[in-house]
Amino acid sequence: MCQIEEKLKDISDSLKKGTAPQKETVRTFLSWFGSERRGWRTVTWIRETLKKYDLITYPDFESTYIDEYISFFISKGDESTYTTPTLSDPTYRVGRLPAANNRPSSVKPDSTLQQIITIMLTSDYSQVPVMTSSRDVKGIVSWKTIGSRLALKKTCAFARDCMEPAQTISSEASLFSAISIITTSDYVLVRSSDHQISGIITASDFNEQFQILAEPFILIGEIENGIRRMLYGKFTLPELKIAKSPSDEQREINGISDLTFGEYIHLLEQEKYWKKLNLEIDRSEFVKQLDKIRLIRNDVMHFDPDGLDQTDLCSLREFAQFLRRLRDVGAM
View 1 (cartoon, rainbow, N blue to C red):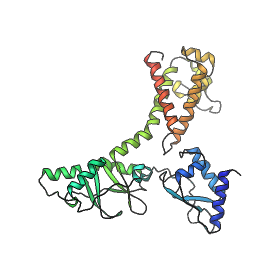
View 2: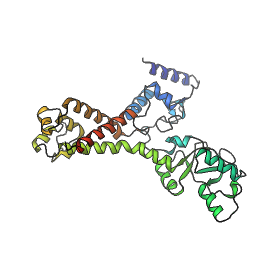
View 3: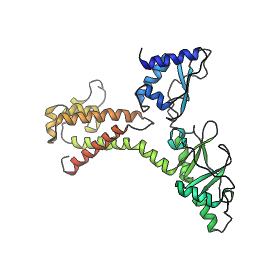
View 4: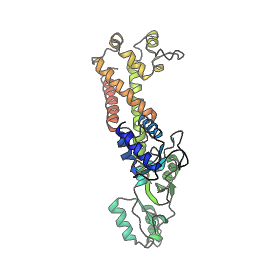
């Protein structure tokens, strides 16, 4: 029995004896499995191992914020508190964003305008919530609300004078449901499951997250287009059909775009076909790098909500740049 399984067995035994084990962060839990991200292979492995010892986590380790604490529970029998999900939750929730878990500074309704401006300037805030407790939000003060009141010569001495109704959203809500709110208001306050304000998501945070999630897909698309351009017009239809996987007999091949990424590799592995590209590049090294991109592509297409590993992202960027250089010098 490996160390991970011993640890989970101990947790399961403790729970069955009525003793609750220590809570762990998702990040720490992942480290037990030698991982930093919740890729589909890692998630599958973890779920299978948890199931082996009748365990589940709450909140679910896959859907909650990576630095959130999770508890362990028995997943079946009379002691069951929560039911085991048969499928992982596909929804990308607001609570997954780091900004949704970073409690913002706030001001009181009777905070002076000078205090508010000082906080906003020193912290580089565009808005600040007006609160009387961690749950009670009275409104929001922003440069827009301050400026509009001063321009109209309205009273704006205290926070209560220059605030407007605050926009809030549950941490359990879909990230996409926050888009329209952020588009209109430039921010949204996030409420955790206990109704406390746990964070604030701004347009800047949203743009940053979009880049994290979208860049790998964009790079993969650019690389695939580059490979197709490299191969276009170099091979006959019978040669392309030979490259098709034998296990996919029903699929028709009418051109280079009908081949899969793996079939591009299969085609270029053969010296006689490689020579048709007329490239002064080492074939084996090129194919090795292309196969590396294929593996990364598989992870990207399975969608990892924690984002792509930086090493893999750099590999995509470098290979895309390599293809651009070939194109720029007229080699393809």
